[in-house]
Image (cartoon, rainbow, N blue to C red):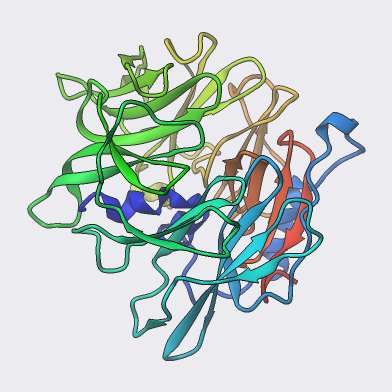
Length: 402
């Protein structure tokens, strides 16, 4: 499963950041510097009741450090935990039941990790009480083991990333992922793949019957509830392209999306109150000194059929990087969490200003059914959640979340 090494870990954007960006497993808390970066997204003023963010209980007594945190729309959630010494990492699962005041440890299907393999498991929430764990480990060139729960982690069913059939659509709550069909000769990446849907009722992987009309490696680019699914790839001429489906993957069309002005890179689509945003990420020139370059930002007012580029990379001009998702706030603002701080826009992502905090890694944000979820850089235990992208409630999980 050659392309699954980077994208199987889409089962948790938080774990993807942990493994591939700048969060080494042995990293320690960055102290006051990361704390100041984190406080850049703290609430200001008192939001209206409709915008109040969910309150997630602190759980500093959970063993180890936390990652792969996710939530369902009803407020229930899951997290993976790891406690490591020089020879072994013990892996656990924590669960937040709907309406519960405390997290609890659940039965863990994950084996302990020995040697220097590192933590390679990721979890994604598929709905209330349902989650799937994938442990890529050494399996990225072949099907990886999975575990699925539908009873809040009380029992787990063993499975595999090998597809067990086909599906005409990507059901609501399902995860769109991929399977490598042809690895590159160096076995470090994929040359050709196909899309799979992870079913929310069983955790099984199914081949999507109708694949997007794109070439090259297909990359899931966003599932905007009530609007569309998005996938990036290349068109017949080899140029980068974006496809969308408004019927959960039954049919696809290629969107009008201009990559040329800002170079290559993959987009990630999120919804704002009156438009969609696509943050196009990719490699910047080495002299910029960032790993997660931000190439361009595009907007769409017709559900993703057509796109307009509103911002593009300029040498030396921040924001130069994006960690996780672009945050589109309920009041029409846009926020970028980058490797050198937080940047805000009040004009539809055309211009940005710094929030004034230290130019340090500002944490990453992922969108969950419960709201925007922010994770502090380096700490693996400090989080914030927001219903509107502007007002946040903090919580901590595990020994580093105190």
